[in-house]
Length: 437
Image 1: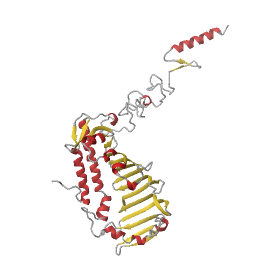
Image 2 (image 1 turned 30 degrees about the vertical axis):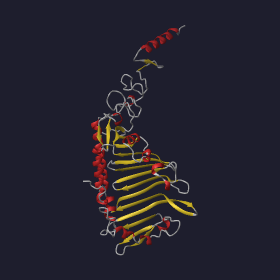
Image 3 (image 1 turned 120 degrees about the vertical axis):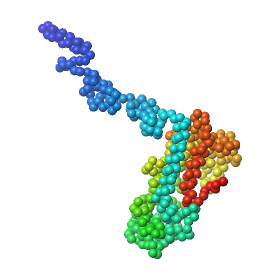
Image 4 (image 1 turned 180 degrees about the vertical axis):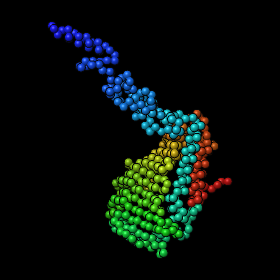
């Protein structure tokens, strides 16, 4: 019984300590300040008392720790940093840089019209830069001497390449033509005095040609073919070889102006081994063309072309087509196009088919009603629909029907764009469209 008073005292102390808001009791009978998340920061000053954050990081200085800031749309971007906190948008795209993400930034019709025009202007500038770039100038001006649709009787590159075949024996007289780098590889120099070629070094993996890009230049160009692989096919007792990868590069004055990279080619089976996938990059300084053709079955094809450059240009086209059969030499466009959809994008502007266009091919002289019923074209800005495209037969006009139901002639935007683009290439091609006036 002599220990009872001490036991009673301890029990009373425990009850008293547990009742205190800012104090608890532990085995050593010493008082501790509350720390719910165990991060060493007292709850009364912890900017996130429910989650451990010993660094107390608070990027926006709102008194709430970063680890406690919400992510309402669960896109991985905290609400206080998210330019669209209630709609997922991991990319945080903000085309007009107004602080509101594109996916939740409702635009006015006037803004939509401005965005359409800016996309066309930007694409025109991209095409103009390509036309004025080193690649087009080297190939069309110097090497082909093309002007206004004509070339001179004696094209410089014909003289350069005239005797190349006799120097590099490709074995093309054989039935099964094949590029075998171990046999034909080497480094070759052009001799302007007699248009001959001289092998200066041997190689088993590449062909390298040194030649002048114009009749007044020295050997300022280097063309290299390497990384070549192929696959053999046998039909009717004949064997032939098709490429599966290759790299081609043309440099002028040590700067690459043209490049071709066959990244992947997958061939199907059958008498005609058509590719089921082709992935190719073509570089024409300053632009890169990425082309992907896929054919999951021999009657379905998807073509995707993207053009871009380091300055942010971006335009391209995508086409999906399904054929009625795989007898390609007997395709009737009027009846054998089973389905067709397409889309074109120019910078942030897209024109896409929301319907199957194949039914149009079977109509000899479609009416306005038939065209509008079968063709559903949408105009998109940053993947958001801003207008429908409608054909008016009596006026022969394509109208843009905006979201406020107002309409405008589409050619107010696109006619000048197409004429400007044609004007860029007509210095090489000659006049493509005659002036009716």
